[in-house]
Length: 309
Image 1 (tube, rainbow, N blue to C red):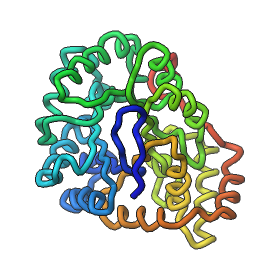
Image 2: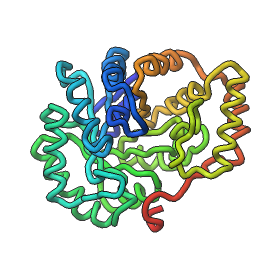
Image 3: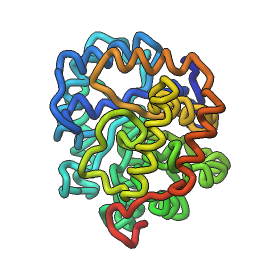
């Protein structure tokens, strides 16, 4: 598995990262022992960056990930987790909670430090507090060695830009904005590269829009986006392939995105990713899919506070 520099952190991360949200059963029930095996399969195949959050399973993901990694040498993988979001509508970005959350996450994960700590889904709160209180508190924790680098995550690109305009971060995590259907993150990449900010791209399958699996009811994608993605997936099926394969191949191709985070609770799916990535994208099929998706290209949705979008 190729590794890439994460901004100016000095960290090299695998170009594909394992997202541990399934360990928290965040998107439905899973076979927990199988999901934990998926972590070890990912590591065995060279996927050495792992991402989680206390929000995933309300702590379950961190706990089970810590168990899965218990006998794995700490210097053989890089690890990111988050703070600030703890339930669907429960947020706390206070300086006091920063200190507490870092310590709790380290305990759950069974490690003495994490490589990256992100402020999670910042579009749901007053971004001024993130800039003036949360990030400074995280920098103090960084000085203690518990966190190597700090960043922010969220859906609207505008909220990430507002943070970049006001302060320095080491990395950002964007989700849903570099996929076959939405490539708006590409416009921000030159600015991030110039600032030395590492980029993690999550959700390359568009929360199942770009897969053969049922799209979750909670996803706020428009009917037009859903239909275009359905037709694109059907075209891939006609050509004897899975649109998820094309979506993953497309998402990982940019060298200025340090890593692409994808999730699965199934070891076989993890193995399948690696098989897919050994092949170049089918350029003819890619062109057909892009033509189908062109009417809804870059169409997203409002997330969090409207003023943060």
